[in-house]
Image (cartoon, rainbow, N blue to C red; front, side):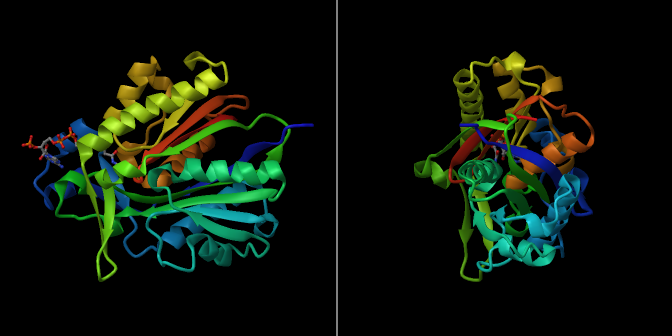
Length: 315
Ligand code: UT7
């Protein structure tokens, strides 16, 4: 029996135009451009302001559909990932369906925080492999500015808003060849967003604990995917990690012996956009021509839950 692989056919992203720089943050909390740059690598981030999460998602989705040359009518499943939806219900995926006119799709959302895109790819892979869906739109959209406390310097310098999307379908040439998902709910308190009575939520985080978790699970995921597929780090064209902190990415790269030209980073421009960060990276890599057919790429997500996961792709 031939194996059916999930293949990424198109990518898209949307970043809202409003830029919040480190210099501007200096006027909001007791911080400095020097501290933020040294400790995180972030220089600026985008804020959605009046733009809804579903509007960012729709823009990214339309670009991915155009890149894939797939009509919305041909999409049979939409999976959206977000921790900052506009409504408890309808779901983000249903809102996107309505906006793009993907009338033949069924729709649901995944909440796995910053690991959401890896989780969604894994779910999509199951639908593709079983033949229950043929063309799937995955869209990750986050307006973290809506749950960020701009009086808390420990967190407000980190987050930004944006959306990324991919269109996937099945094929017999290798695409997504392996994946790994995990969660440790018992540690969930180190990174959470409380829901207050008025519906407002605010992120709280033990940065040091999340940092240690992030470095250790990143290394674990990459090593597991390499070993399981009899690969070495030298076989991998790029590792695309969730964009949380430059020091996390560098610590992982150093530990794995990975040179800088094989990691992709755009967190200096956008900060941490949660589940949108990996598909935004993929879209920038795709459109700039960095990704060549046959390149092996590992995606690594980690975040609140706590959740983590990785995907091995052949582009
Ligand atoms: O998607 C996953 C989401 N989260 C993450 O990935 C976050 C992971 N953690 C991190 O990235 C880092 O832990 C942070 C960037 C959040 C913090 O960096 P750190 O090197 O762990 O700093 P720290 O929390 O140990 O704080 C060191 C000092 C403290 O001052 P004292 O106690 O030494 O006087 C903080 O109060 O830096 C202070 N500090 C700041 N100073 C200026 C904390 N935030 C700021 C700030 N500006 N924005």
